[in-house]
Image (cartoon, rainbow, N blue to C red):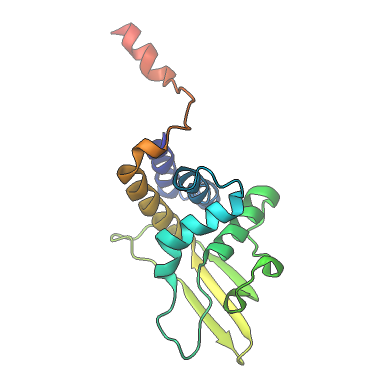
Length: 178
């Protein structure tokens, strides 16, 4: 099931359905977090912990002199909540505890597919106080898909909570006609 979901995100990106791709991709830390921390009841903690361990720690700027905003578990979880529950790609700054990630201006970038799938994000601080982060939707989706795919392939036994059967009806009908 997990690989089908990842394929659906990639298909949505191929069709330039950015919000559909992003909405589904933002559920992957939920799913993988449930697999990694099955006894943890706090879904926000599971989400953030899995994201930070598998993605967030690689998103941080290595410069220590002036910490820049980055896509931390808190930021991505806030984006997930806003997009999935309110239909808006906002960040709720009041729920972000890390001062460096209290982003004042959050921007989504929609960009068509490039031959080598190289996309970039940007963060900056204006006048030492206004924090801006620009995230490329395609890049974020690709990172979430790649991390979820790798985690799933290494931990398939932990995904036993997928109990739903899926029938590809068109495929079943084709079998009858053959």
